[in-house]
Length: 126
Image 1 (cartoon, rainbow, N blue to C red):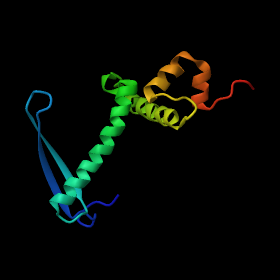
Image 2 (image 1 turned 60 degrees about the vertical axis):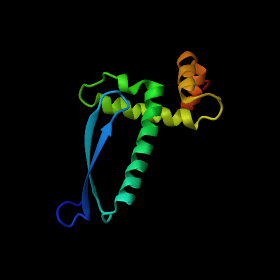
Image 3 (image 1 turned 135 degrees about the vertical axis):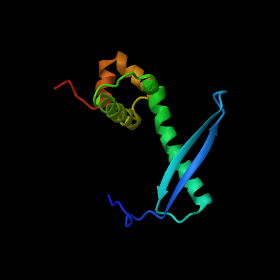
């Protein structure tokens, strides 16, 4: 990673947003450093694109594993569990044999060892 004056950054931006959806008014400031030339329209598009992808992935993890309610905090445990959840999410999405939502597949795997082994691609018959 390059740092310093030759790092390739061409502009720094501060974006101030107001959150009203929760019923409480709050102001949030976000800072961005980019190699793109200053262009508000382009930066707005890139930021929306980034958060769209981030929110889509996070929403699935939260709905499937209630990630926002997790109280795992010690050492690297939160990062490790998040990684395992993402791996499990990829396995559930990749499976085409069971027709259900990701959350439904997770619940099925909870109650059936054969479905769990199918998702994990483990053959216990040997």
